Image (cartoon, rainbow, N blue to C red; front, side, top):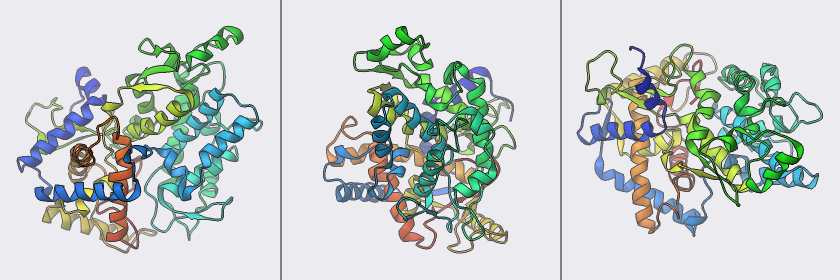
Length: 467
């Protein structure tokens, strides 16, 4: 495919393009023009009912549902690990700003180290003796590495993440930190090490974002003076204002800054998504990131046309979802434009549509996926139970699946709110995802595939496939 022109590139990199292009695929589904999935429209009501019933079961007052973000995974088992850390930092006199920067440091790394684990992998938590699996196990492992100072280059200041430590991070540190061995396997850890080193170089070269007077760190994104009521400190001790506060679109209020999401967006894209698309094309489209062709919506035959390209920006959105929460909770920041965020096309959200029977693979694609799984199972260390269709990240099947997930879960959100008699302000998409669609997809995966809890379609792990 020819390189995208500047205006097309800007559009496909934007958050706005995600919903618009995914709904083009949804329109193709309504017109029965999908190439890889069949639809059973009446079963959309089953999806909605299941999500509503799950919310009512778990949350008597749906307006109190926590938001979907990395913070939830740290609190696995009902243990408030992040709040405990914040309290400990406050007790030793760390400022509110520094507390926030540390949480942002931790969450950025935890998002980049959030990926589909081997079904046999688990993590034994030292403090509690508990064993955790999947995304929660990864979060607790990252927390222990963070607390041990593995992401800091300053031994006197271990609870931070900085460029120098990431650039010099070793594979053995991650292997030991994630307790990986022959009996506790994990695929893709080498790639994640490369991603963290990439983040280190991004921090070093993007000093306008991450600080020029100190060792660059992700938390410097908010800087030393994010709230207006602390602005006077800048005049007293002479620090320069941070990237977000200095940005001309940021509005300063007495309670805290009003920050436009577009200000944060290019920063998080640089952290991982664009890197994933640089090398072999398996992690995305060069210079566009998590953007893929979808023949079901192609209308132009012009070689430079991008009308069939579908944006997802899943990792970048996951970072935003996860970083907004500490900004709002700790500093009173208000992020304007979050209505542009979409449902994430991840394994559990996507699995919900398949496990309820709303969408299903066409026969030829199902058989091709099963053959892919069986071929992959011949490789050492690969799973060999609960045979499930497997595809490469860029396979047209996966593109259609992810687009349908994004669009239809948007529609599900509207219908769920109607059923609960709530509006978007009372039940945000982030809340509905955590308490509804994501948990629903996870429960169905556990019921449908009890040995592995895998999604109904497996994406093959490969170099720079980081979603």
